[in-house]
Length: 290
Image 1: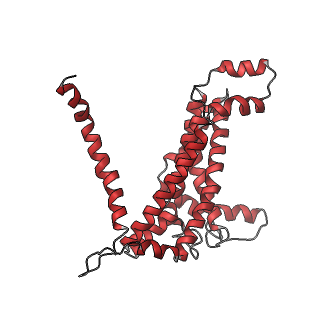
Image 2: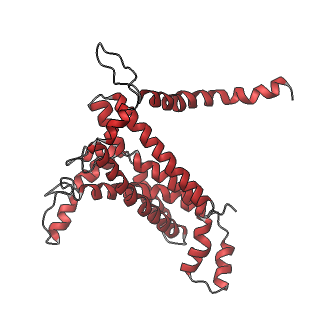
Image 3: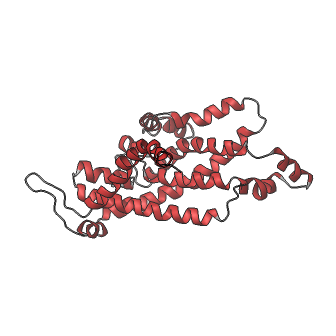
């Protein structure tokens, strides 16, 4: 192989590699380095402080509150979003009148801007005259401030996230279902398998590659959600709805503590990497790619 043949592929990859390094790898390495520095102030440049930012994180009650909220948020959104996505995909994949309209209706929340979605649900949850309040009043139930009560605010945010994400995940499952040969369903029917047995023994194992992909994306989405919080709750009341990315935003841009924000970011990225690694390692053994 000549020199030109060896160099040409790398030259073709160079623009993409440059963007990847400039906007992904270099910022990640810079964030790790910044996490060991103090926050620069006027007349006082940043200096190396070791693990002081990480030591302060251990004693930060708001960080632990945001971490707990994020775990609850992830547990509440990921399984429910995936289950709804599979159910919707199975429904719109069947021979159903108006299935094109149903597919569009399920996918519409995904294409709406996040700020618009947050404002729509903010109206739904508005006390006294919001849509949810109108329904509860019609049923004779007492009025309730869903976003102002620390016991219900996180659940209200979870409902919004599931409503927006389930339709997005449905598209992947629908594409996977359309790749499964109909002969498998016919063979299962000839063997006397019920619909539940066919789904559990045949369909769901064949959907595992899609489930693995969706699960990793759902995990990332559960940590990077900040738009809805900014519009609907701003982390309140009493940090009851503060999630990790929103707290990092507050620390970095409201409190202007860039060193501590960098340390928080490193911890979140490391935790995501570890969880994603175990997800892939555990589920890959149970995944059928053919």
